[in-house]
Amino acid sequence: MSGFREKLAKRQRMARTLVCVGLDPLAEKMPECVRKRSQTIAGGVYYWMSGIVSATAPYASMFKPQIAHWEAIDGGIKKLKDLIAFIHFSFPDIPVFLTASVETLLALRDSTRLHA
Image (cartoon, rainbow, N blue to C red):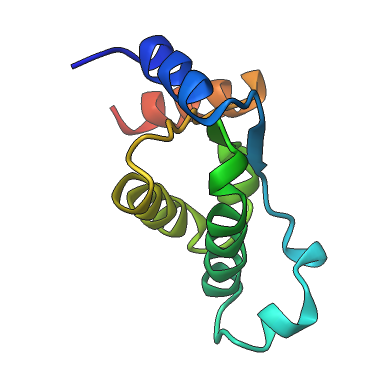
C-alpha cells in the first residue's frame, strides 16, 4: 500500500489537477435549502458537504476537512467520520487530509490527560 504522498501525486497526475477542496463547514453559512432537508444541523452539514464532495470530485486532488469546524457542531465528529467513509467508498483514488489547528490538538491532548 502506498503512502499519502504517493497517493496524492498519483491523483494529481491522473486528474491533472492540484485543487485541494476544503471541507470546513460553518453551520451559520449552510444554505437554507439544505437546512430544511435535515432534522439536525449535523445532518444538514453532512448533506451539504457530501454534495460539495460529489460536485468537486472530478477536479479535486484531495479533500481536506478541518476537525475544529466539525467539533463545533453537535454530532459533527460522527458526521465527519461518515463523510470520510463516503469519500473513501465513492472516490477511493482521492486522498483525505484531516487537519487540526494547534489549539485543537492541545485541547485534545488536555482532555485526554483528564481522562487518562
